[in-house]
Length: 440
Ligand SMILES: Cc1cc2nc3c(=O)[nH]c(=O)nc-3n(C[C@H](O)[C@H](O)[C@H](O)COP(=O)(O)OP(=O)(O)OC[C@H]3O[C@@H](n4cnc5c(N)ncnc54)[C@H](O)[C@@H]3O)c2cc1C
Image (cartoon, rainbow, N blue to C red; front, side, top):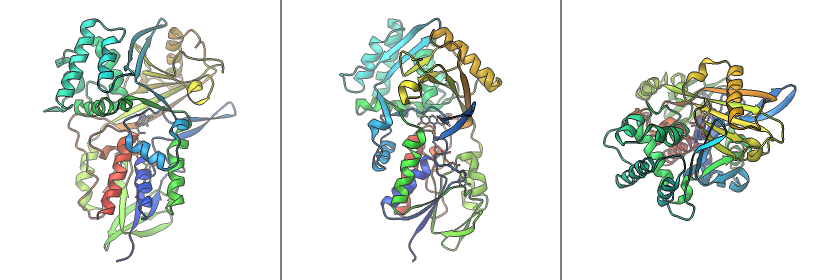
């Protein structure tokens, strides 16, 4: 039998993780990416404003200390974590107008997990004693039940049953749910939310750390992984949309604008909404296709507001209560883009009815009521990712990495069933596909 040659379709975190793992193990790999750039939904874009060019991430990403596979892969690709990320122990600080902190929770630094979180809840500011107790009871219950539910249900319903007050939801659970699942609590899967809590609040206390990119996202993820793949002999083809995929003999024929090429194995690492064109001609892929065709999607809008360079916020990251925006980042302190503020608006909501200019100006106005130093932005840019993530709803059918078509595998955030759409889910799925290729 001739040497395996693996085609990877899609150069996002999942495809890059699969390729990096395979080349490390000595496999011949060719990665096809439809666009001119790697990184998929985690990439940096060049934006022009008044003839000046700015590098902005397509969305402000947060990684967690619990992202063990992503961090291990980046280390392998030569990324220095200290240069790439600002690591912040868990601190949720919610700000509201007029200029005040309405909730603050800091994980207790000196204690192991989950005590760090329990003591953090006990001493947090902005909740009544009975609310703090209700949150602690819930965390203790989750630990005792190993964060497992008998039946998955919508998170809001679950939290009501567990006697979490409106304020607890608004200050604690909703911001965490939106950050982790990018899905409104009314429809979000409780079990997947608990999986993220478990990974963050069990094991090492560093698992709940926030890792905020200090460099452009592409410089941290796509570029180093691509360099690593190429240094080990892997081939990367940009601007190569795979138009058609068919079985041929023991392998697959794959068609791009260059024509057809033959591969022994294929890993499809495209987003779920793009699976249809590739799975069309493959009868054994119809089940996975049917599952993904039922998916709903959630947007993420990132509103960049440029203020004078001396502008500085009290914290690099804060939550926003009672505002259209949910999280605010000071990119000056984070990555040296002085005066640049990024505000994240996750999931579906009223903001989608506004034009980009209206949204930016509405958020700027809200911010000026919380932070006196944010008067009027010099310029703004809204990046709207309409299908940022799949809607992470209860009991969502998720295709497995292994398909019923021999030597054809599925990678992508949607295939890592324990997690919502995240970089870590994508990385774990890519590595799982590489393992399956090696064992095939
Ligand atoms: C604005 C935003 C903010 C986010 N914030 C966070 C966060 O804070 N933390 C976190 O962990 N995650 C976050 N995510 C989610 C995370 O970015 C994604 O889960 C992850 O990047 C998905 O990677 P993937 O490889 O599965 O898919 P993708 O990144 O979508 O990669 C798929 C690739 O396939 C390519 N492709 C499609 N069709 C073809 C074809 N026919 N031929 C060749 N190539 C093709 C696409 O161009 C794309 O590059 C965010 C996402 C967005 C959009």
